[in-house]
Image (spheres, one colour):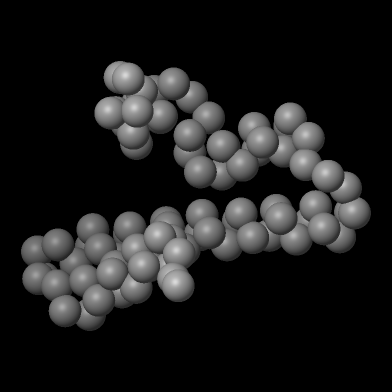
Length: 85
């Protein structure tokens, strides 16, 4: 089973390849940013593994920062229905 992130990356790749020229820049930027975010999370996880330590509160905050969800404003922009609940 593919993860939501993998499916999103594949959908963006299809959009880059088959989408309209008007939206191409948006698709390319979205794919680049999402791939960078995934890469940074994997790097951070591997660093924790190399350091042989369990995640702490600061690690949680770092992951929220990588996901661009560290502030109330960024959370509201990304998940308005959840924030409003």
